[in-house]
Length: 305
Image 1 (cartoon, rainbow, N blue to C red):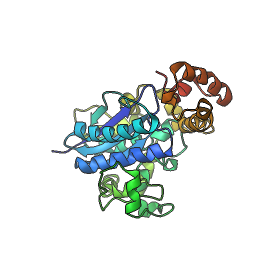
Image 2: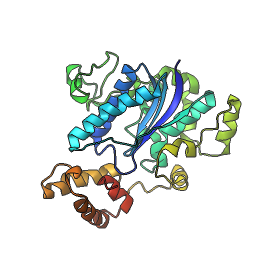
Image 3: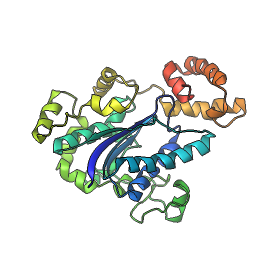
Image 4: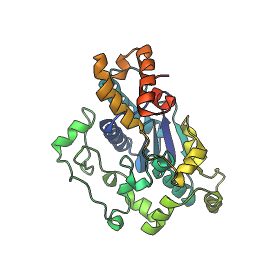
């Protein structure tokens, strides 16, 4: 019997997605994992060092194992790396009741806002948000869709792309062809209601609303959604929700680009994982001085434990 879950996979010491190609491959691996395990995706968002997923599945362990294995294989081969990417265990919350589900979906899709990446969840590319209420919001696929045979360059070898899945011109599987948008739209009722949830500020009202579900499960909050992410500051996330983030700050993907494309050629290697820990530690100081970023962010992008 399928149940609905919020799943979160986090990485403490390193980014999981260093560039656009990694984000696209990660999303594609997730979509294919849903297909192979007969899971139903409702929402997802990929951040540089963690992933949030809302999914209906009879076996969350099987679903996550399939997703992690295929992406891990890609990441390790590309960056000459060994070992598991992300923490050993993923975080899981069962979702029961309408308001439990709506709140979880809202917090997942708003995650880029809470982390200060963008001012609105609709401005973030690597989530499923643009697969919902497409007609009402007038969403179009930029650059058109990729023809069949070309799509196989962007998925694991020996994988079969379901006929219903479509890709954009960059090779990313389109969320509207994967998620159960019809069910989500039914749960939110209207596009206006969906917009309300996407712009609503966190507070006690969210918790009181979930009491209507009459379940014994605790209410979904920003804190519970982020519990699976090892390093987060709820107070900063709430300030970001109020639009007080520094949107000019360097993101992980920007720093990784500088490292991979500008700095690594000086060492005559193609991956940070081919540098010694001492070389990476020396690079931290340079990155901090040049780009004025926190030491924790520089170390994350250099995969320093």
